[in-house]
Length: 604
Image (cartoon, rainbow, N blue to C red; front, side, top):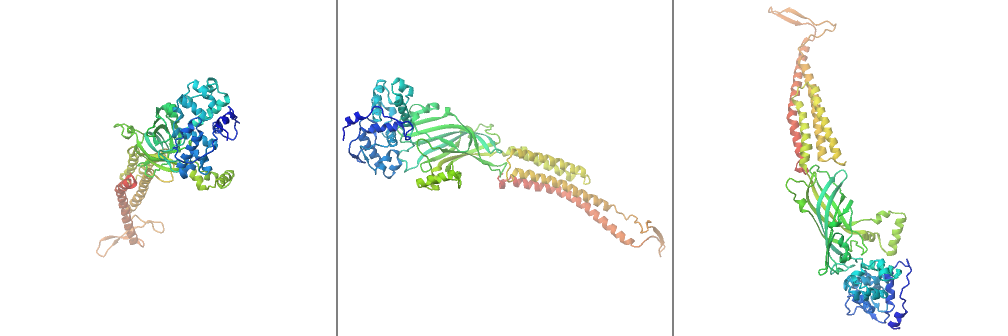
């Protein structure tokens, strides 16, 4: 085995890079040059070495670094395979040789893990930063960094121009440094305190604060809302305090705190209020609090079965999007616990002031549930190139459609804003007017029964007025496959008006027929030969003068006339009774129906 000194002399000062080769990070590939001078033959397993990974941040301690990596991976047992820094450890039979050259991706994961377990480079002093450069293959830049007194905080803000012109770093090396810097400083995946990725599902609390709801559009099935979302979680990767708001959360130590990237599933329009965002991290408690503010237009399914006494639950659904810090499938991350509330300004407004037109805010609730943002199995269909590709990938990884669905499923939170329609507005402006118009149609019951033109004219006029209300409701309400109570009420009121007009026709017919029959007084009936019958005087046995009906069947005609007069009287009486019964029955039945439609049995 060659000595460390001799090995270091054989390493070129500039590691040759092939741009675009093998798809590996330049910064990660440079780690291979670091490993070249660490070839000491021994084996490091779990042992008693504390998994702090501090040795991985110091120059000339690669052997100790490998030992600490092996110890950390061994402490995670069967779950080591889910840790990026343990990929080589697991592939090597749960052991690492100190002379082993780590995979570039694994080495990058080790360096990022060291920032959590030991000390974040942002906090490095000038000397610590210099040692870190040597540990990561940039020893040739140590002199320039020390001369410029570059600390860890300064390092995170170095630009490509500063590296080339101020620190005299060759352009290729400067580009390598920047690529590694950006990759390293990106926040890693969330790891709750006392939790392990691959074994435990990470959790974060979410609370909605509904500040405003407006423009509830029943025809467009949408509403506008303004919300605050407050999130809280523990993160073992937190390495410094942070307390910032607005754009400052992307500066200083706050820029390196993991934050979820939210996806609003039912948003049609969305706008973030960046001035109201806030980030707070407590390194002692490893706790993070993050607040975002947003306003937008959201789609919402609605039911109008009880309109205008309906209650709507307007949803705002949020899920976490996959980020560079790792995947966040349902098995990896769950929002828990979740809650929602109305802002105090809208929950209890000042007396006499309205919050939203036509509605009242009743409350807000939230619940967590799994969701699939993109259902790849369904989108691929049963055949075609995409189906073939997904089937090939499933065969390659030994997975099934269930695994694909599981990988696509994420944890979502739906905040439902409960709103109730201001029924009084509709009662006064619509229902009361319909009731009055329908009641006016009953005036025909006290009008002369033979005045069909007047009675029918009033009914038709009121019928046209009710049709106008139907047109207004059709514009205000969506086209549903069922009748709402309001639509049903207007239609039934229309039928009551039609029945009143029909009653006028029936009564007029009875009145006309009754009067015609009642006027029959036994008028002279023509003889078969066309001459009028004659009444001839005759002398009775007592000497009285009596009239003798001429012609045969006179007595039969008298009997028929009497029957016609009786029938006419009955028809007149029936017409009178129908009017009186309608005058009482129509209002009673209509009142009962109105109470039923808008009463508690129908949700009124």
